[in-house]
Length: 203
Length: 166
Image (cartoon, rainbow over all chains, first blue to last red):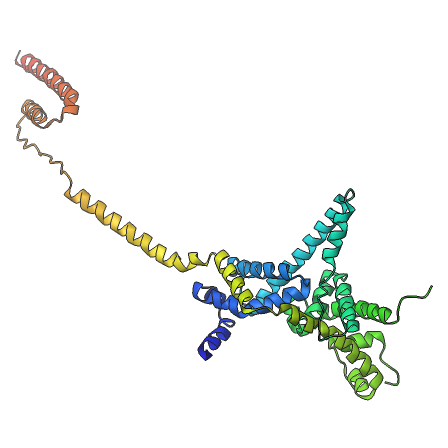
């Protein structure tokens, strides 16, 4: 067991050619699949999409392994691929949503179903009270309305608990850019939370 | 700092950018610390929720891994060196077989005519005899041509000898 764990931790440090060899690929997947899935579910909050995109992430990494130049760890490289896949997924989902919305002029029920599917997962949690749950959902919904870069920076920081440097590496942007986007994202999200806490405006 | 942190400064604190004056103020001011901690706790709830959402059974991870492996063209990379070696071996065997077959195949014997003619006429006769004896059937028309040429040449040489004698 100790040998297996040592082997797994070693794969993360291997050069890509070795990491993606037939012998090590399965272990590479085994070592990173939970992290990639967690990242994707943090960004998308959609278990099916997260599962599909986790698979896509490893397949894409495998097929484009020759483009990896080793300037970052394999793990960071996988994160980058996952973030890009999530970005494409959100973009496609939005396009699909608007297409369906325009196409559903004749069938408004379909429109409502579509909207219902976009409402975040609200499974009950014993750990949190209703108010906290509401606020977390509010934060999530607000995050979904941010620009792609602000949303990614915000969720990587708080849902993935990444440091600013790690976010900078994953998104391949300057540290200053990460700080600027995070600051703007925080400003928007905090304003929405404050607004929610102060209650609906009196008429 | 003789005032509470404004929104921008609280954002900086939440983002993890903590200039010394903000750190100092947060240590001293319970109100600002509470504002920061409250919001940070809320945002960190996203982390806890991601943990909950990402919590899956072992069967899920095994099935996912199996799915990835079944879709990854990794079998090619595993077998590629073996296929390359097999191809090389097959090429060598084919080359050796071809060489051996060409070595043991029918050898075309060429009889080098022993020409010892002392003059042109004798030389032509020798050539004709050699062609008659060794000529392959498809080349028989060429043999007839050579015969005709020989006759013409001998006729010419005879008439030339007569003229010289006269």
